[in-house]
Image (cartoon, rainbow, N blue to C red; front, top):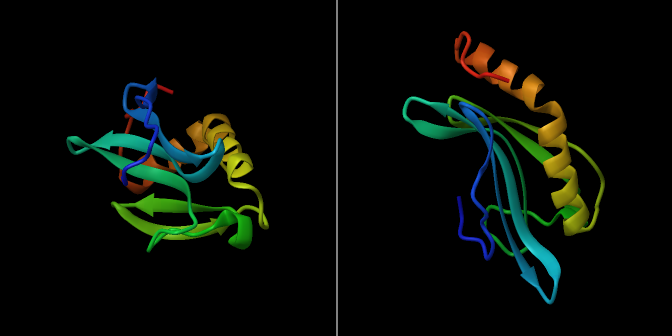
Length: 124
């Protein structure tokens, strides 16, 4: 994960599940962020789904121009990109991402466990 101005400790939701966030602000406005659901597998935290915004990054994108999307991961690789909205302010996208991951954590984790043949892995 890239370096961000603010990177609070990950929020552990279950034994093997956490949400990691990072963001950077300029004059109080969010200019970069990542919100990522992660699963502990094979001795490391692997991405399950990720939302991000970086208007100036090489691999980032500007959700204020392109809209918000969610990256879906399997076996450590991005396998799908799902469009979520049209163009929205970065702060609104950041809030949406956190809310979506918290509300849909079971669905995202169960799919990840199914894809990776993990039985009784998380305690959600």
